Image (cartoon, rainbow, N blue to C red):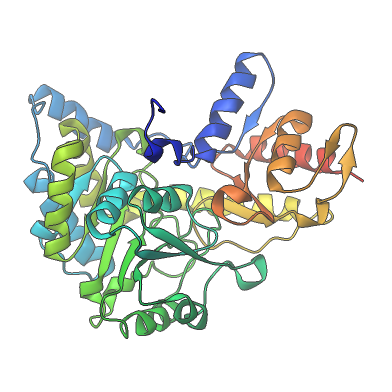
Amino acid sequence: MSKLSNRINNLSESQTLAMAKKSRELQAQGKDIISLSIGEPDFNTPDFIKDAAKRAIDNNITRYTPVAGIAELRKAISEKFKRDNNLNYTAEQIIVSTGAKQSIANVILSMVNPGEEVIVPIPYWVSYIETIKLAEGVPVTIPTSVESNFKITPEQLKKAITSKTKMIVFSTPCNPSGSVYNREELKALAEVIITYPDLYVISDEIYEYINFIDKHESIAQFDFIYDRVITVNGVSKGFAMTGWRIGYIGAPLLIAQACDKMQGQFTSGACSIAQMASLEAVSANPSVTFGMRDAFKHRRDVVLNLLNQIPGLKTNTPDGAFYIFFDISSYFEKSYNNYHIKNSNDLSLFLLEEGNIALVSGDAFGDDNCIRFSYAAAEEKLIEAVKRIKEALSKLN
């Protein structure tokens, strides 16, 4: 008899975290590794947010918090949804968690029964599939490509829906592709979803403030589908607060209450100090994030220009987040010394070992033709990274 449960044995390790771990191990051995594998802003948390955390400590706001979140923060998030997204979620419809990852897990575990299907567009964030499996649901994926800007069409969505479909999970701006759905595209998808009375949507909008085109659009803005959408967000990406671990949802009241119940048995309320810092963040004018957004856009343009000079790579122009998900399939079946490249994982390991550059293979996100490049790093490091990629790839033939 196995000492471990089938549940954990069937769960895959996060490949983004695994690559980051391997990079740290190589760096500890003295190797000059440029790690662009993890999705984390390289900026510091703004001072006005850190000051709020210090005040919370000085004011002894250090005790257990309500499971659903501190009342002032839930009210501020409600106001933020109205201010930024024109979404009317009451404070009772807000649940604060230890990151958007827990928020998503709460929803899936609260709603998906064994055997029910959850549609996930490819490429997807690594944890979607594993959380669905944890709930004993069945992931149903929809393929996209660099040519389609990594977006699904209403026709593809309709074709994927069956009598067992419970929900669709997607992100905009997207991790790993950086793709951003505009208002018309979201409305077209919503018009398909609404024709199925038991179909719900998890809209992961954690990269909302890192958007290089028009204003961010939420699928819940359409009144006819509002009651079927769970909107997920948080402070980690837009405010450079990854380590603070605060995410949240706005959801139909019944689903919010279910997530409150689920969270109450797992972690209870999130850290009191982090919540007070997050209160300062969500209450601020979003313009405080524009400097980081503009820096990311500049870096994107620099990296894209350099990547497009490498033979065989196919790129699109991502409109948000801080990733480029480029197609490297033209290098499959090429070799160098003991390396023979058959897939994206082979190529990412080749780049790590031969080029000292850590990226994440596309198979982690459901698309084995691609590799994810995070440009959340200093410009000179990004330029050097692309140089290393170019030099390493030139050895393959």
